[in-house]
Each structure stands twice: as structure tokens, then as C-alpha cells.
Length: 349
Image 1 (cartoon, helix red, strand yellow):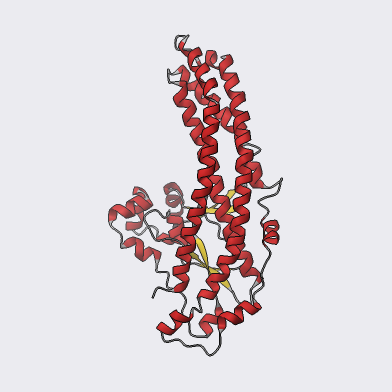
Image 2: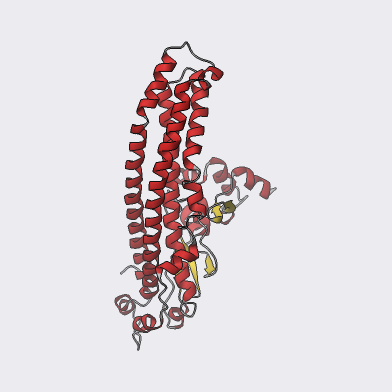
């Protein structure tokens, strides 16, 4: 029988992915309508360009149809951003509730009766019932206020509602001016720039949902310090996992520490429950991520690490634990990512 904590964590990870995909589907559909709404302005720009020989960048910038497209793009995407904000806020609230529920379930899973019996561990008392009786249940609203992601002045809203429309519109104008002067099709350029705006909003949605889920879990553990002493960083050991997450996998943290994964990072926190150890129940075996990585085919290692980082690791210039560094996000504060080859080279001199 698989370890119930790891088994449950895998189920929760899959459910989180389903929630992300459902929210992303809503956003993609809404954004598609924005692009369709802009089609008349894009067509007008195409026709204006076709009536000219290849214009200079200065001539392209003076086109009236380009100014109209910029105005309409900002207006349409601002409307989309308001919809996205409502959607993301709803998902953040839902993920807070789910995070509170799931984190409590992971604590209980340490004392799963079937798993204990299969492994020859018999307890004299119903530990799960005792934990339920003493567990401090936090209201979702209190956690939502603590996280501060859904207010009118939140960094999340500033990153989406207050900037997305103007940012995409201006980037589109800049790309169109340069591209038209090079003889490129305006429609192709507009589609590329619109795609960048969609990708940004999808990444924002995913990151907000995952962050809210993890912070709700951590809030639960903080409120129940007498039961949970900390958490372990749990990454998926797969070829799609970044070096930073592999480096952090299995590390131990206090409940006061944030799991500061990168944008759209899907790592989770497993609770450390001292009572389980006291009763002779072993912690779930996560496996050593560096051992796992070195056991992969060379092709997989190169895909995960990149050519230069892989070769430096083979030469012993750095190990997996060196492949994580921090950076600052305006929305989430300190976050983690893999260092560049240049950063590693500088540190190893």
C-alpha cells in the first residue's frame, strides 16, 4: 500500500491541475473574443499598409488606423482584465478553502489506520479523532484577509487590471511600427502580441491559485503549531521539473517560512507531525532528488539542466543544491528560480 501522505498529496496535485485548467479555459475563451472584437481594426490597418509602398517606421507610427487599433486594444483588454480579475479572485477564494481542507487531511493521513496495520503499527488510541478534536479550524475569510490577494489595492490586481491593457497595447504598437517597416504582415504581428498578453494573464492566474493554496495550507499549520512543527518541500521528480524545485525537494522548513516557488510552480508542502515520529510512524520517503537526477539518461539531464549547467555538474563544479536562487516579485515578494550559467560560473570562481 502506498504511503497515504504521498498518495493523498498526488491526488491533491492532480485536483489542483484540474482547477487550473478549468480557470484557464474560461480566460482563453474570453480573450479569444477580445481578438475577434479587434478584427475590424486589424483589417483596417492591413488595408492602409497595402495602399502604401513599404512605409518607414515613422510613417507607420503616423497611421490613423494604428492609433485606433491601440485605443481599441487597450479598451478591450482592460475589459478582459476586469473579467480575469473576477475569475482569479473567485479561484483564489476557492483555493484557500481547498488548501485549508487538504492540509488538514495530509496531517490526518500520517495516522491512516489501514496503512498502520499493514506496516505492523497499532495504536492504542484513535489519534485521528484526537487531532480533529483539538484542531483549530480557520475561517477562509480570515486567511483571505491575511494573504491580501483579493483586495482592490492588492499587488495582484495592480499587476493585472491596472497595467495589462495599456502594456499590451503599447507593446503591440511598438512591434507593429518595427514590423511594418520591415514588410511584415500586421495581422501576424498583432496575433503574436495578443498571444503574449494571454500568456501573461494565464501565468498570473495559475500563480495566484497555487500561491493561495499553499499559503492557506501554511496558515493552517501556523494555527496548529502544537500538532505541526514545520513542512517539507515536495516537488514532482520528473523531466518537467525545474532545477530549482529539484534542489529544494525534501528540504525542511518552519511553519513561518513561505514556500516561495517560481511563477506557476506546482511544488507543495508536506506537514511535519512530531506526534507521528513519537509513535514510531516514519516520515514519508520523498527520495533524494540529486540521486534521482543522476540516475536519469544523459539526454533527460541535459534537458532539465541545460548544456552548460549539466557539464559543470559533471565536472563537480556545483551540485544540485546550488541550482536555486532567489529573486523579488512585486506581487509575491521573494521567490525562487534556477540560477543562470553565468551566475554559477561567477560563484564557482
